[in-house]
Length: 102
Image (cartoon, rainbow, N blue to C red):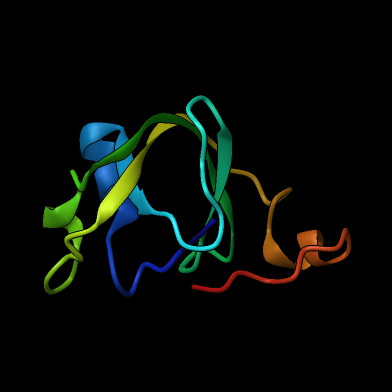
């Protein structure tokens, strides 16, 4: 999933509460799915998460710049944070990554 840091401070949400809320558009999550989060400001996959709740209320509204959408979300719990460059966008593109899009 693509985390647009111009809309929401996902990094701080993970640091403060270990979760982010994610609206499901085209892709529907199931409980216990693994979701990798591509962070726009880093241009890399930064987080491995696990879906710990579906069809729930947003819990990261205070991390949004402006008014957070009031929608039904899935809760993504932080499992692992990646710090190296192995998952940078330029490397991922070589393996078929289509680029992060919000």
